[in-house]
Length: 228
Image (cartoon, rainbow, N blue to C red; front, side):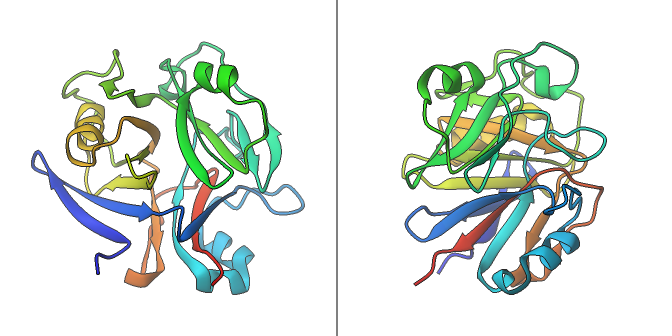
């Protein structure tokens, strides 16, 4: 049986790929406690989950955030919208348009550009996080991403494959945007993929005893085994 999180090599770089299957797993977002204090780390998330940790398959940082750790883009946690869609221009990776939204609705997980999300999605998703840039849009690399740029960071991203699975990827060393995007297109067969962050990127994978503590985090995505 293939592990939930597995190592993949691509173009000379190593990545960890964690697979979430909508038939067996559920996804939830976590950002702050009931008092609005951001968690900022996997140890704090572990404390907040308490007994639910036993069902956790893995967790990863998931989306751009402000200095306090709160999301700067569209954000839905447990069906409650805590931040509206951000379509503003500006500096940084988030504003390298098009950016996009990873979300779940009725047991189906999707990634759309922010404009596509605004046009197509009328009902509140169960969960959602807006980030950017998009890495892949309908099978094409983001037009502003270089084939192999000089900006190298530990990066993480999410894609949705033809089976509807969400593939969460974190590089095991510094990589370029272009290489990360091609991994999703050429090896993981995703048509849409969304960049989640770089340099702060982290993975919590209990089965392997991995809990990254690279830097303070913003919103986090957690994948749980469904109740059987």
